[in-house]
Amino acid sequence: MSTNRFGVRTLAVLAVAGIAVLGTPTIASAHVSAQPAEFTQGGRATFAFRVPNERDNAGTTKIEVTLPQDTPLTSVRTKPLAGWKAEAVKAKLDKPVTIAGKEVTEAFKTITWTAEPGVKIGINEYQEFFVALGTLPEGKDKLELPTKQTYENGEVVDWSQATGADGKEPEHPAPALKLAPKKATEDDHGGHGTTQAADSHADTHEASAAGSDKTARYLGGAGLAVGALGLGFGVGAILRSRRKA
Image 1 (tube, one colour):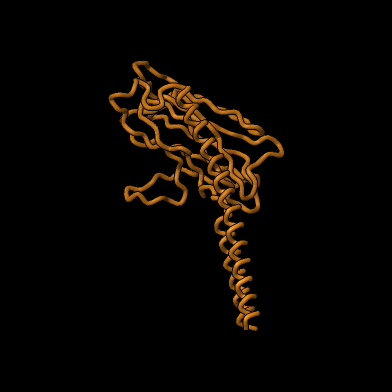
Image 2: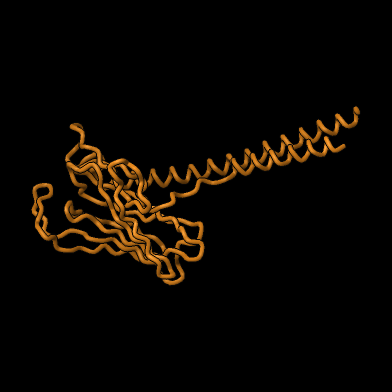
């Protein structure tokens, strides 16, 4: 009698564990990051700042990105997001620079998203803030974008630390874009040379994220069915063995 009861309990525990593993959704990155993060030097980049809320007692209400001034960006566009106000600020450069054969004396300095009253990134949530940047610098393999995350209780987390020479990720890494050298077959704007191509890249990213979410749900449902079926077979086998005994 006790052996049969132990067998039933064991099968039940295994079924629940399997359902829990297969049905658990993917958790967003634990720090502010750029998604996707690989583009071509001299081209444009359309991506999202992915911002997870890391506090269990406050929501995120403001995001401020600092743009590089040594390799300035002359084009910044933000994608509208309900409940958030975006503002891109320009400033004069300390020294004029030449970009694509033109002298540039001012460039974008910051991008800020501020939540409207009653809006925030809540506990166990994350938000994506899409932007289109150009022209990306040439001769540079990485573009770091220090970001400050402000919570509704006034706390500010500064994601601005650079990755060390050893490749080890710091405690508060700055979001960064990896810049690949422009290939000879690419046009003067690089791998993402047109706004249409950049927007297409963003749409593909969003569609991919949606597809991944659906796949996770399907797998979760399949895991539930398999677990329930396995439990039923196990209980049936135990009951048949008891009857024979």
